[in-house]
Length: 415
Image (cartoon, rainbow, N blue to C red; front, side, top):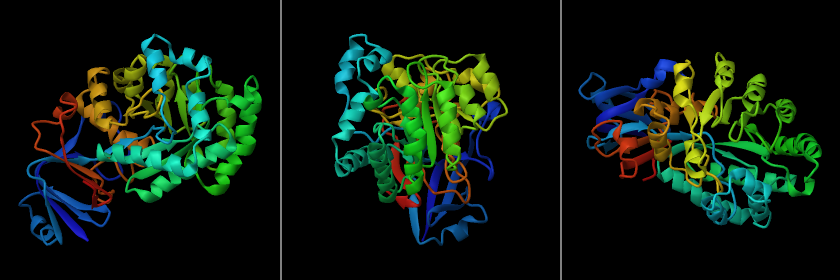
């Protein structure tokens, strides 16, 4: 069935076919049309233009018409880094943070990721799915249309597979475009305390084959940082993953300048994520590569970490993606509009740069920018229809004023 969206005040995020990411000065440019229409055919964008043009009459023959009432139509947000499959919460650690404990101190006391692993182990797959579905619907209703979800709170083969099966069920249950990432190397499981090398070997020789046998993951991630996994261990896991056709997406440089960016680039990682602490060496090594620097300002906000040097990366000619890092310990929110606002307020991105970082570039960072992240004929019709807005800048400026009128995912109106 075809659907026509008419009376669009501004159609935002138009990108030519074949453009998969934006870098450098292009980060500050957003294609748009005033007084526009857009035609959806099934799940995809068929065509678009300005009302009154020579194609508009034919488009009006569509079976269904949606009146945008002068609002913007823009691509749905893309969130390339989340951990929404988890059990319970870690609100107790919120008090620890208020009392001044750092991420590293909480982890050293056996908290953090290991607490989530303990909770997840005691939770049935059905209950884990129920809890995770609630969070996935939450972010969907806030305008996210594409979502990467990581495992990493299992830390043993059985529980990592349980998480990945839940992700597969979410993908089958929702109109979200979901990608699954295996993060067995999120931390060393309690059973391997003091035997990190043995744990890395187990990830490579036991977990990875089991994940691949069920076809449960699109990517493999490693937490390459101070107190977690070394660059050498990271490369060992990525090398093992390549044998199963699984590309890397790395946690790097959240807690220290860890060498994680260099490890990821050396193995062709699709993205290197966090980047709260980087130097010019990281910027230099990313130039000319296919790896997307991805920053997570929600984690900086909640955990009092430095904000990534996004503006410096753009000035160096690189692209930047922004993602939520939605997780129970260091960023318990999946609101990509707030991520966009933090990109502007704390990282000094222009609204246009932050918009591209939260749409096309974040889609690229999970291998989806050929399918979504922009208004492009042939891409998925995953769109936000806003209330009438004075400017794109209003979205991050007035970051908690309701702005969504309707959400369409894969051609289907969900709200």
